[in-house]
Length: 172
Image 1 (tube, one colour):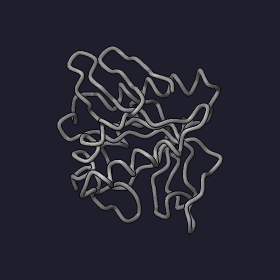
Image 2 (cartoon, one colour):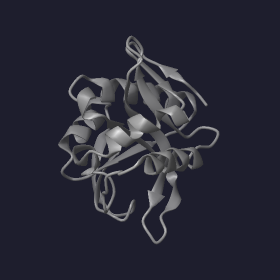
Image 3 (cartoon, helix red, strand yellow):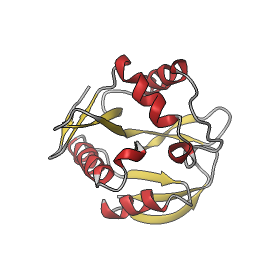
Image 4 (tube, one colour):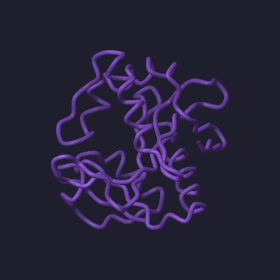
């Protein structure tokens, strides 16, 4: 697992002890409303542990899901991703393309953490030779689209190629 450091953040491996934070973050509709074709909030610790296991299953020698942690306080803030996109279909299957993503706890919104974490992930992707990097957002998720633009990503239109939903597609 590759930890990443930015001025305010540590992006690190998820641990089982983080399941309570995962439950707190993903049990909130304001976090989940833009995630996936059929968003559903987590309701129990078993669901949080299953999410952590799913993230581990999506990792390989380069791709991973990081916990975003405040370096000064140690407080968890969210998740950052560099993973293979999942192609639409039943079931979803890993695509060739690589996706960057981020999910932040509402307490961490509006403080620049998503952009800072994503910049660290983009630098890691570049060092790892991954290009292009794509991002997909729900068409209504203007906050994540703004982060994509701050990262220098270019909007290339709508697509239904991923996650069994229509997404706005951004690329490096």
